[in-house]
Image (cartoon, rainbow over all chains, first blue to last red; front, top):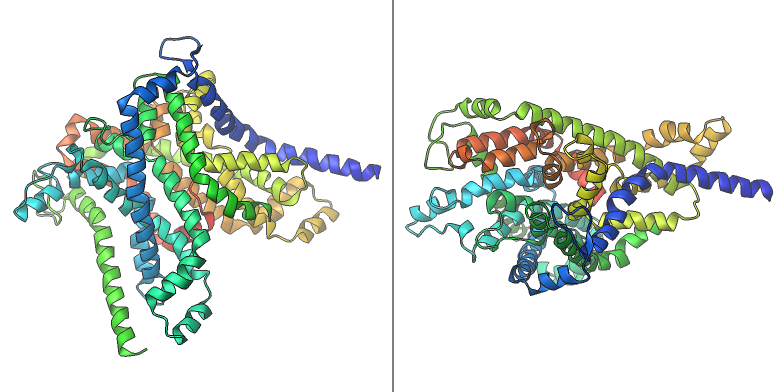
Length: 296
Length: 274
C-alpha cells in the first residue's frame, strides 16, 4: 500500500514537471492576461501613466455612450453574418464538388485550398488592387462594360460586403476540408439504400447528409466565427477603418485604442467584450464535441 | 451509369472548374503583374513582356533578406520549442494518471477558445515588464506553450499501446527515453501535421509581430510587406507591390503545391488553426 502511494506520488510529480513548461507559457500568456484584461478594464490607464488608476465602470460607460463603439459592434456582427453563412454554404458545396471519384479532384482541392495558405496581408494587398478606385481591376471591368466605377473601398455601403467577398474566397477552402472529412464519414450504404427507394439529391441532402453532418456543422461554425472575429490584417492594408469607421471591426478597434491611442483601459474593456463574444460562440462546441474528444 | 447521370456528372465537373478558375484569378493576376513592366492601367493578362525588374527592384529597395532570415529563425525556433513543450505535456496527459489533469484541460480549453490575437493588450504589457519589446523572443513567447500541439499529440499518443512503454521500462528505460525513443517516432505523422500548421501560422502571422517589433532587425516578412504596400512609393506601383507579395508568398505556395496532399490532410487532422 505504501509503495503504491509512493509510486502514485512519483508519477504525479513527474507528470507535472513534464507539464510545467507548457503551463508556464499557457498561464502566462492566456490565463493571466484574461484576468489582467478584466482588471485593466476597470481602470484608467493611458500613455505616460505609471500605474493604472481604478475607475470603476467608466471605460464601459464611455464605450456604451460612444457612437463608434456601436458602429464597430454592428460592423463586427454584420461582417460575421455575411461571411460565415456564405463561407459555410460554399465550403459545403466545394466539399461536394471534390468528394467524387475523378482524376481532377486533387487539382480542384489544391486550387480551392491555396488561399488558406497565403498570409492575409498578401491576400489583402492583391485584392486592394482589384478593389481600388478607377485603376483597380474591378472598376476597369465595370467601365469596360459601360458602367460607372464603384470605388468599393471608399463607400460605406460597399466596403464590408466587398471585404466579405475577399474573405469568403480565402476561407471557404478551409471549411471545405472539414465538410469533406464529415462527408467521408457518412456510410455509402445509406445513400445506396435511399437511392433504391427513389430519393433524389435534395431529399438525401435534407434527410441524410445534413442531419449526419450536424456535429461537423457545429464545429465548423465555431471555427468560422472565431476566425472571423480575429480578422484584422486586411483592414490595416486596405482601409485602416475608413470610410468613417465603416470597416472597423472589433479586433482592429482594440488594436487602435491600445496601440494608436494608447488607451489601455479602454482597449482592455473592449478585450473583455471580445472574450464574452468568443465564449458565447464557443459554448455549443464545448458542450457537444470536444468534451467527448477530451475525456475519451 | 446512365446518360442522365453522366450528364449530371459533367455539369458538376464544369461547375467545379469554373469555380477553380475564379479561385485562381487573383494569383494569376498577381504573378502576372509581378513579372511584367509597370503600367498605369491594370489588366488580367499581361500586355508587356516578361521582366525580372520589379522583383530585383523590390528586393533591393526593401530589406527583404533580413525579413526572410528573421521569419525563418522565428518559425523554426518556435516550432522546435513547441515540439519539446507539447510533447512532454501530451505524454503526461495521455499516458500518466494525474490528479489535477482536469484543471490542466481547462487551461488548454481556454487557449483553444481564445486566440492569442485577442489578448494583444495585456500580453504587450507582460512583454514590457519582461523587457522583451522589439526582440525575437518577444514575438515567439506567447506561442511557446501550445494547447493545439498538446491536444493533437495527445490524441496520437493515446493510440500507441502502453505495453510498448512497459516493455521499455522493464528493459530499464526512463520516462525521458520512453518519450524520445518510443512515443515521438511513433507519432511522426502528428508532428508533420503540427509542423505544417505551426509553420504556416507563424509565417503568416502579422498583428503580433507588428506590435512587438519596431526595427528592421526584428521585423518579419508580413510586417515588411505591409509597410511596403502602405508606403507612398508603392501606392501607385502595383507591379512593385505584386512583386513584394510574390516574394513573401513564394516559398509557402510552392511547398504547398508540391505537398498539397500532406498539407490538406494535416489541416483535416489538426482541426484547428492555432
